[in-house]
Image (cartoon, rainbow, N blue to C red; front, side):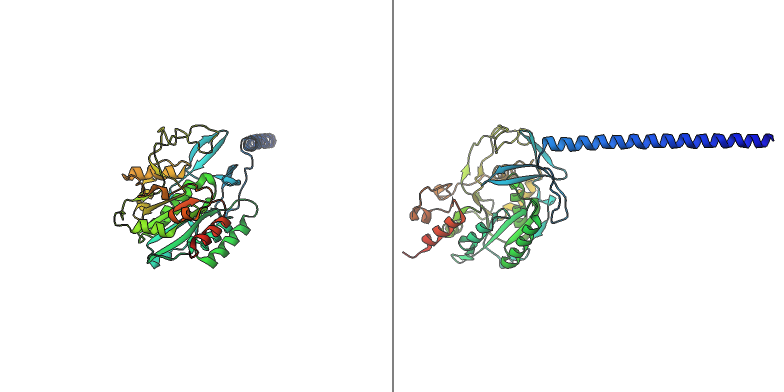
Length: 370
C-alpha cells in the first residue's frame, strides 16, 4: 500500500512537471515570436520610411541586391544604387550610396575574351546604359565602324551593367541577342547607374588589362560623343607621343571637391578628404597608353572609391606617379562646339552631341567628299 501511494505521488509530480514544462515552453515560444515580429516590423518600417522603392531582387547572375534609392539623373534616367558586400558608404542628403570600385568584386556576364587576338593598335571602350541601343547603333554606323585608320587596327566595344526594373529579364535577353549579332558587348554584374560610373570605369580598366594587354592605346569615350578618328590617330602616331605612362584629354586642374550634400557631385570628406581633386581628364573621352589599365586597377586597391569617376581615375593615376598630359592642341578635346560648323568637326578629336541621330547626320556631312 505504501509503495502504491509513493508511485501515485510520483506520477502526480511527473504530470505536474510536464504541465509546467509545456507552459514554460509555450511562453518561451510566444516571447521568441513576439521578439522576431518586433524586429521584423522595425526593419520593414525603417526601410519604407527612409528608402522608398527598396526591393529589386531577381538579377541575371543569381546575385541578389537590395536597392537603396532611385534618383533622376543623366538624361532623365532613373538610377539604381545597390548594396553590395564589403561596401564603402557615403551619406548624401537622406540617402546612403554604396561604391565598390575594385573590379575583383565583379565578374563578366557577357564577354569577348578573344577579341584582341586581332592585335588592335587602339581599343575604344564605350560605357553605355543597357537600354541605349540607339546610341550603340549610331556609333556602330559612324566612328565605331572604322576598323582601320591610317593603317592601324581599331576596335570598339561597349561596356554595360545590369538592368533594373520589372522588365529586366526581357532587357537581358535583348542584350544577349545584340551580343550574338554584333560581338561587341561586354557586361558585368553591377547595376548600371550614374552613381556606379566609377565601378563601370574600373571594370573597363580590368577588361583592358586582362583581355587586351597587347593593344598600344585605349580610349574611354562616352556614348554621346563625336569622335574624329583621323585626328585621334594622328595624335597617337605623332613621334613625340609616349607609348607608356601616357594619358591625355581635356585636362582638369585644381577642381574643388563638392561638399554640398544636395549636389549630384557631392563627395564626403570620409571618402576624399582633400579639398581639391588631383589633376584628371574629363570623363567624356580620354586616351591612354595601354600599360596604364593594369596600374590603375592595382592602385584602386589603395584608394577609397567615390562617385566622380574621372576624378577617381585621376587619383589612381597620381598614386601610380603619373601626371596627365595636355594634348598638343587642347582645343581638339571640346565639351561643346555650339552651332554646327563642318570645319569645327574636321579639326576636333572629341565633342559632346545632343542625340544619336545628330551623330549620324554630322558624321555623314563630315565624311562627304568636298
